[in-house]
Structures are given as C-alpha cells and as structure tokens.
Length: 130
Image (tube, rainbow, N blue to C red; front, side, top):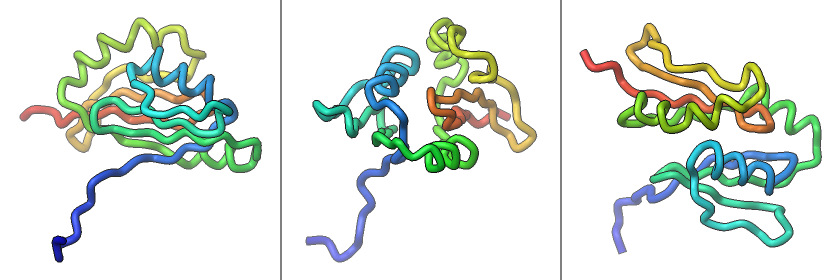
C-alpha cells in the first residue's frame, strides 16, 4: 500500500432528461464509446480516450436548467483541427447555436464549442503553437 495518494480517474457527472438520447448524441455525434448503460436508462458512462462522462437521468427541470446555464466541461486535445474535421459533418445537423467552429482565444488556446442535447457546454481546446 502506498502512503502517497494517487488520483486515478475523473469523470464529469451530468444530469440529463433522457439517458438513451444523450448516449446516442455522445456516441453518434461526438465519437464516444459506451462503457456502461443501465437497462432502465437511469445512468450511463461514455468515454473517448481518457475523458469519461457519466450521464444520470433527471426529471427536475430546475436542475437541468442550472446545468445548462452554469456547467461546462473543458477537454484539452492534441489535434484539435483534425478532431473538428472528424466531427463537423455530424455536428452540422445540430440545432442552431449548438456549435461554435474552431477559433483562437486571447489566452493562447484554439477551441471549438459544442452543447449537448440538454445544453451543457463542452469546450475542446488545444494550445496554440508559438
């Protein structure tokens, strides 16, 4: 047993209206893979590489509203433009305002943004070479 603690895993836990719909979004639109999905669709875990997102069924509109308006996930990537080229054809079918194409930030990151079906904002970013 180690006396030095080691953090081994982290995941964002996201309340969603419909777990099955959210799983479809993350798999079909974002290229994630299902790790686990409960038969009753109460919870699921999807991942892409080391990034895990836990989806939890929620019927509380106040919680869903707070999540959509206040929660965001920042995912740092290598090869942002390649990821954008992979995802862009699928993301183009999302509702207006759900996607912001790649752009450079003043703080030295190149990013694109995507909102999931319940409005949670995901930032995908890569440090601008310089």
